[in-house]
Image (tube, rainbow, N blue to C red; front, side):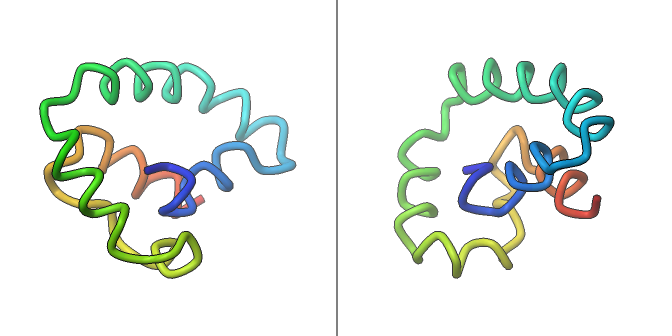
Length: 75
C-alpha cells in the first residue's frame, strides 16, 4: 500500500533526516497492516490500477495507515 500510493518513496527519500524520523512510524504501520481486518478490501483497492496510477490516489479511508500515508506524501 505505501509503495503503491507513493508514500514509501517519500518516507525513504534521500533526505536522511526525513527517513530517520519516519522509521518508528513505519514500524508501527507494519504492525497495523499485519493485524488489519481489511485485507480483502485492501487487495481489491491495490488491484484497481498500476503502481504509477495509484501514486496520485488518496489512501482509502478503511486503511489504518491512511493518515500516515497522507502525511508522508505531503513531505
